[in-house]
Length: 297
Image (cartoon, rainbow, N blue to C red; front, side):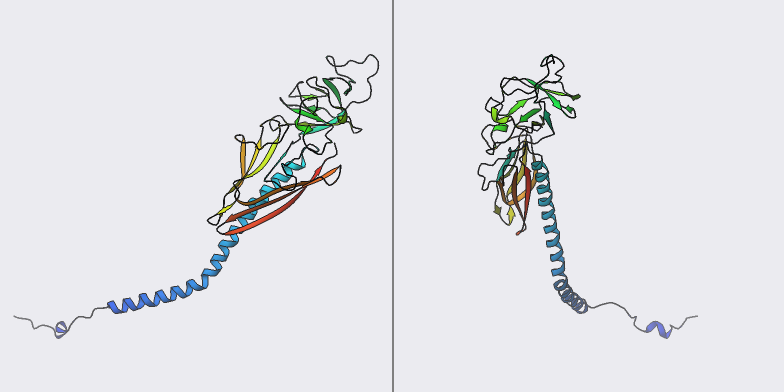
């Protein structure tokens, strides 16, 4: 017995989907809408990126300026020097770790001097005196520490000179424990180093002289080309020179402008002016800071 086909099976089937033309139209419309949206959000996004870049450059420059300012404030009086006081790309000074007063009044009869307990031993400026007593709290010295006595000369050179013409001496006494006296090589101090304040400063042996230097300063391709470096432990130079080689540390890069200026305001005070500029992505920032220097020994 044969079955007759259902009339519904003879109807054509329906298919759902998009034609190629419809897909192209959708893509074109989506592109137009995307372009319109991009035009509106481009400026805010670019502004955010520019602000972030400026904030980063400002932060780098600000940290570098604060580091230099903190260092320079500890400088031995009248040890700040530049090759050109009106402006330079590098600056040098002697940092301090401690200080005190030396005994200046004559020791009483029978008091033990150098080679004994050093009790009540004065610093005698008329002879090559190798030791003196500290008045005040004891100081813990480290190997190769130095002392500076009577730094009053504004030319900045005597604190770097350990000869009889200078006021720098290496400490050779006991280290690692509080000491009540200072022992040095027997080189006589110059007469101008004897001051009513009777003060001396201690220069850390692991630092010695310190130089901040801006090197390769300029702009190329919208980027700063300079580097700000800190040099230390290179010794002492009676005449200032720009150090090179290790140890050194990079404080900031992409430096586009840099200047140090130093003006002794009077016999007791000085002012270091620092200008630091950084350029990135054709955009520049410049910060200025003044650092007070106490030149009263």
